[in-house]
Length: 413
Image (cartoon, rainbow, N blue to C red; front, side, top):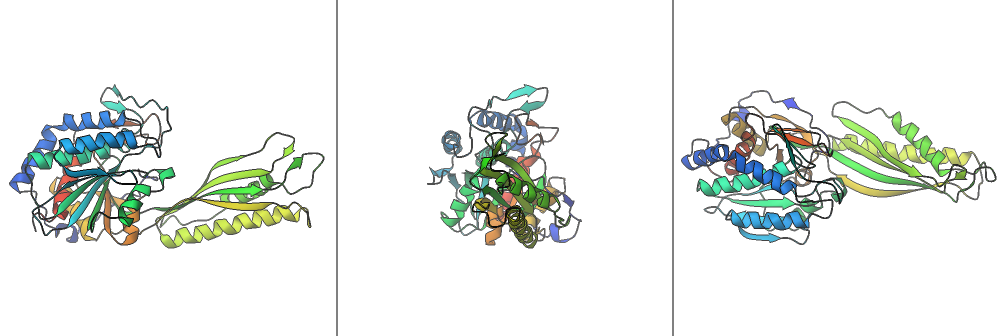
């Protein structure tokens, strides 16, 4: 899911976005688009039923098994689960065209034991993960069904993929495996993630660290004066809070979790903090990373200076919790212009921006990649109060994904 809300920038209506021909008048495509609208209840049924299968971090297998069955029931071929746990199914074309990956992610942020039963409250569906990314998975299933029912053909091939490990702890492990061990050359990558009608053309990068401040510890009275790991951590947090970062490109920092200590009268042997750094710019992210490392070292040096020559100085240990590459927004690429043109053909102009999704990794490799929203209205992502409302035109999300996908697969050229 988008680990930050996208920076929404309304794309200026230029000629470039209209130069990509989309096959919106192709009879088979028209039939597929109409079937998506007509069978909207089926999409919602998929969304709810998928959401009620738990998929905690690193434990997506049960949801993956169900996706295998649904892929097969929709006529996808060569359906399999790769060694990392990604579910892959193929819909071949007539030959000679590009290969497009259309993906949604299987995992959620919620731990084992979370109640994932979806409840209907008026027009809102409430359940952990109902929008992120059960909407994405339901959308790719709907696209597969509509292509089958409309008998849509195209020169290329579409690989439908349910990825594992998109959320924070997974560090994009599914999509990383997919591109390090590609089943074939991948020309275009589309992630369907989240709700609304937004288009992600840039990648918000992130560096995450667990930083441990360590020392022998001792009695708060008897060993008073000893350098204290938690005091060093406090100094570091104070320095981090004073960081100045640019608003454009958007760059952020956060100390999200702190821990340590055994009792009120103990100099703790350990203080730890988890830090999240993000930016839309690779250069700003690297600069912020350097600033963090310097601040932590200065904090440790200052704490140790309280007791020069101490036989028990504070030391620091860095544990890498995950790196997501940053890529600047590119609204002028062929893949972005295809999505924009598809949206306009359906009566709306997508808002574009940068976010943190499965598309980060292929973007960083130079592969043409975007993330599309799945339609509807989502609220409270990553909370147990998460909800989804289909609104008056929720079906436009799957329609948009289908039209963009077949355009990239070579239909209408």
